[in-house]
Image (cartoon, rainbow, N blue to C red; front, side, top):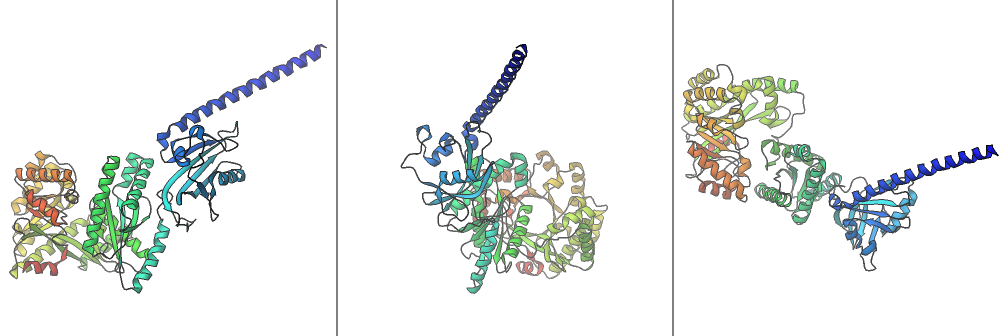
Length: 587
């Protein structure tokens, strides 16, 4: 009898422990559910995603704002009889009622699952979506969490969806795989008709820095909004594709000349900048690389490769920039030691030469000078620009040899023009930080000018604002010596960084050149108009002349004239020219 009592007591104790444990688990689960419900009710954090909790019988227990809008839900989350028919299309199957298809998929999956790149059909239009189904968090009453990540609207007739990446998931745009196929098809058709077409590659400036500063989620929103702008505003003029990261490829649906294409690209950049400013109240800029078929490549692979080269060159130069591919942009896919060897050989073999970009007086419309720009006729790669090799030259010290070569060639060329009685003008040469600090640089320059009987007063040195301000005391010493030799000095890319006005005032300058990033959209950007106008007044107040860089339109030129700007250079007046072509302007 006593034994029975003991056993019974033990059973009761064990039963009590089990009940206590189950109650504790139940309370923990209820607490977790409460947290989840609170999480879902924060609708604004999930503006684009439709989220709902479904019962075992597929009644909607909870729905956020996006879900209510999608399914036209009434009170108690009921779908009205007159609601839009929502269907779901998976793989090649025909679209059917959303909840029927979802129920089949849930039955087919034991665990949580993800339906990627499936289509919702709503009133004859399709939305590409990702659907996430979670069966683990709500299993007390066998309820299910469903999240629908909404994407861009696609016409219902667009039924050829490539499962291997035909549509870009983030933006809903045709992907880079589709772009390559379409460009090759277009090339074949264009070749038959002896026509041409133009491609743009648009990239957001400083996108990597934006990701680091604003975060991945926010920059994804920037990409989505950029895609929305492009598709909503460029329906007739372009066909748009999403490439990698922040890049968008655009096929121009006509045959513009390079000048017209440049105007189109410029308007696109300006409008997109304003769109982001109005939508997000942030300043974003974009640049464009451009190619033309068949000049810049006979197939999609080459054209796209050249697009990336052109865009990279554009973004290296400045923000909000446009560059058309030329053979000068040919990249050097070689290690630095090899490039260094080839530069040394190039100097010995006279493979380097100069282009000249004219600078014009805005009042008299006279050419008053020209900037000498280095080019390299590489034996394998053809003509390439200085930015492809100067970084290596800086690291290895060869920048000094290159600098001497540039000075010598520019002085020799000037002597030739002077002996032929051609028009006088001021030659501008770019000087790097390392060149400025070369031992006995002034003496070497004096010898060059004396040996060729050329007046140093016919030359100007361009020094970047950032270079000049890196060591102001040393800069003052160097500038004083240059001035004593007879050279004039200009601060280049003014406005691209921050200078001390006190330091500028102390330097023996002749000119200051306003960076093209402030000129690019000046006509339509009131802020830049105010900034440039104030800069011109400030520079004049310091006693210097003003040169505007990157002037491309007569409207920009007109504004600069009204603001009192002295000189300008840019594509409106002339591209950089080989010496033989530039010589014609001197006659």
